[in-house]
Length: 184
Ligand SMILES: Cc1cc2nc3c(=O)[nH]c(=O)nc-3n(C[C@H](O)[C@H](O)[C@H](O)COP(=O)(O)O)c2cc1C
Image 1 (cartoon, protein in one colour):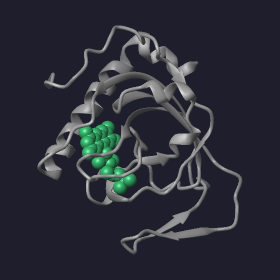
Image 2 (cartoon, protein in one colour; image 1 turned 180 degrees about the vertical axis):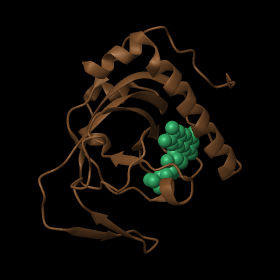
Image 3 (spheres, protein in one colour; image 1 turned 180 degrees about the horizontal axis):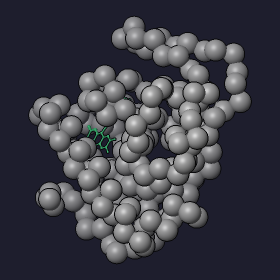
């Protein structure tokens, strides 16, 4: 399964990991994750992450996250540049099952395939949700690094690599030395 750019994953988290974030707000990304890739991601503002994240390489990481409902505010709708509408429900439809500590893969960087101008932090929660949760909050712990971000000639190649990232993360997070961070 190893790909040329993969970084070997140690048997347990090594410095600077684990990196635990504070509570971050889930904002609106470009919306391609769900629509184009079939891999939904929760975007959080880079500025809300701890300072130590600034020293990390750009690329793909794994860890655990927990979602939280946010105090209901007035309903907010946003329109993306491509015209699609985003409804902020602040996580009010999340169930107890969705609010457990869940495994994640996350991408931090400029998404060279999409030529983004600003750094984004996108978290794919490895769990089946029945509803969106824009405006909810997320706290997460980064436990390791999988690979640098890459450019691709096709969308299919990007999707295939993200699927492999998910398998690598699942395997690492199920080993006892990583799984214990689920409870910390
Ligand atoms: C695990 C994971 C790995 C990713 N790796 C890359 C990558 O190597 N190169 C890249 O251009 N984008 C990568 N992405 C980012 C996707 O391109 C991104 O999720 C997509 O642009 C959707 O973003 P949006 O929902 O803000 O539109 C990755 C995303 C995830 C979740």
